[in-house]
Image (cartoon, rainbow, N blue to C red):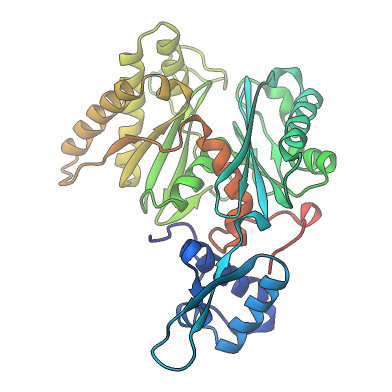
Length: 377
């Protein structure tokens, strides 16, 4: 399957790029599945020399990340040894902190969920209480499991992804400036990377091959968007992209928790609270149509608990408005609107990919220097 998220280029035979080259090899081992892949195929697909591939695979085998998967007949000479990834050799935690609930998953190196925990969460209780609750759930999740590369945390924004610092989270201004990444890393003794819930979900969807350019719209306790444009997760220079819920649709409309009036989030949540889901879908569709017209994206994916509770209604309602917008713009092709795969666990699984994707060279995500842990390769 074609990769869509900041795919690294061909291998380079330079000692300084050992990590880059190991990531290429690991990604091919993962893609090959249980059937495995030979060293010769790894060299052909990465552009590395056979000697470089042999050194990398020997190191990965010694560290437990690769193992023999049998032998395969060759066109000449002795049969080739085939290697496979060892999924249980590493794990990552994905943590979704919503305003009123917490979801934590533990995934292996293939991204398969091996453990899961859910708990209520009072985001308004303050930083100490939330960090205590999150750390406790992560520790319980890890009990009895193998090595962990790090923790990916996804939550409502706005926030600074690079430094793991929250800004004025909509409705919870007291969080402004709180270094959540550092606080959790210190509490858990593990590397931590923080991103918006919508970005994490979009990353997971992109790695699964959703489309080259799409928007993930998340309607739950709030409303936001994750954007993948031209194959890359788009955060913006200040990591503030995707504040989709705070575009104004109605001048002098109802007050929004962000401090403005007539925001799409306020209009959608008010309609949901009244039980007017058709109206909520139309409002969401209008905002989605604006996004399609502005960015010319290929696909719109809908997620969040409110959407999943009435999936067909939202897909139909948003899809009808988006279709009308595309027709008015002279578009020859439809822009499909569909529910995001993964259900309510999708954000947590995407958060785990904040940790795993860089290991396989699949995204430009890095832990800040003071929160780095063990590296593979």
